[in-house]
Length: 132
Image (cartoon, rainbow, N blue to C red; front, side):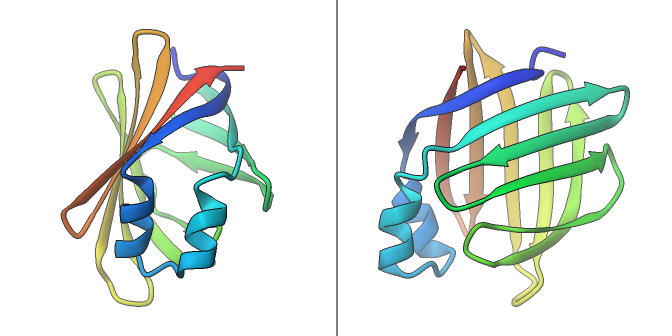
């Protein structure tokens, strides 16, 4: 799949506002905006392995399309949900464990960029990655 490979964050759109809506404090928002995030994505059939490396942590997430799994954001927010493939777009639907509210996430290739979109409580943000 086209998502496979190594990606480095290039720029963000409305990311601080999104983090604010998520309840992330101002100090963590400032740090999060400059996390130097890198992704390594590998797909084998319906199984994905995503390695996230940033200034703050390195984690490996393994998930199968359509199968519920648990995940913690860099700020410690715990989520439960699934990723599914809709056309060439990964669509994630997650619920926060602390308040039950939904976080949607999308990953898709547009041109030569990986666009990662988040939507929480009506606030949309994008992180745009270039191949590393």
